[in-house]
Amino acid sequence: MSKNLELLDKKYIWHPFTQMYDWLKEEPLIIKEAKGSYLKDIKGRWYLDGVSSLWVNVHGHRKKEIDSAIKKQLSKVAHSTFFGLSHKPAIELAGRLVNIAPGGLSKVFYSDNGSTSVEVALKICFQYWRQKDKKEKTKFIYFKNSYHGDTIGSVSVGGIGLFHGLYRPLLFKGYCLPFSIARVKNVLEKHHREIAGLIVEPMIQGAAGMLLMPKGFFKKIRDLCLRYNVLFIADEVATGFGRTGKMFACEHEGVRPDILCLGKGITAGYLPLAATLTTGKVYSAFLGEYKDKKAFFHGHSYTANPLACVAAIENLNLFEREKTLKKLQPKISFLKKELKAFEALEHVKEVRQLGFMVGIELVKDKAGNEPYLWEEKIGIRVIKEARKKRVILRPLGNVIVLMPPLSISSFELKLLLEITRQSILSVT
Image 1 (cartoon, rainbow, N blue to C red):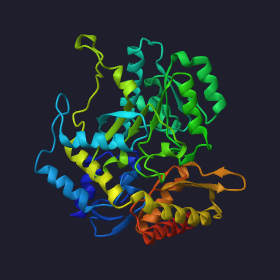
Image 2: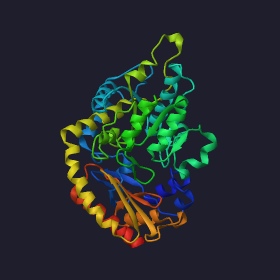
Image 3: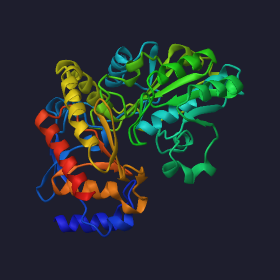
Image 4: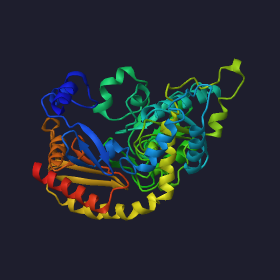
């Protein structure tokens, strides 16, 4: 049975962010079931999920409360269009999101995944200024090494050459800036009349390898956007729902964005769902007579899917009932303490951490700051070594990422760190 599945996978499937030439030569890991912090493959082997199934799982796999909520909703309706109709789970969830989001955000637009939540934000921003009679405001500021998704609009505001460079001829142009207040201020001073919005990952750039912002930078660029009348978009797809130790990363510097993008952990890793939150000021620009054609002409077939919405509601219930954020703090402190040992490793250049988001950057020569070459596949080799020891990780180039479920036990967290350390030492 397992061999047949492997053959069928290789015959029919094209995996994301995967060199299929290599995949076809290797034994694929095929997951059959899961429980808590662990995943089980079709051969009966259990693995510790060290990256929350790509940064989405929050309370562990097969959480009975979320399972039950989805089963209960299944007995009512699995899906109904959100075009011209509504339903209870979406209404309830919208109220809950507004209540926990940074102040001033009062409207929720649903979509399917993080990339689409960013597409929604960009289009809202663009259309907002056209309906405010400022049609010249069409460009966006974004940052080097930023990642906001893989659809065309989100790639247009992405700053990672490996992911985005190839597609530049397809994309709209904007201002790609470094983490420099002086540069941001300069561009806004000269070009604010044509800039519609600024989009940023709060506090930490995830896909870039967990790159941390300078302290105070996030708050300062928000203030500059207020000064120069530019909408501020916070992309919390990766950082939201406790990943940084707070419900939203915006809270670290008390920032209130005009638009907030949410995804990944919104359903605790159960079902695809995303949300784009905006202020009443932004929303009101889309109100008018039918003949005015001011409606937001955007939507998805599975917008506000009821099963996903009840999963998200129960996710938030669990945050409250189990005091998830409070229980997370000692684990964050333990993680920080234990990661210091990694800094002493011969081939570890830097360890970057914010809450439960960790990047361990590997180099060939620490003294000379010589990186491993892309073709050496050092990150892939390390995660394959960890897989032999029954831990699932996924690298970002030469950066080993740790982002376990928030519910991981102290014992499991220690095991994750020890196997990661052993794997780095074994390969390097």
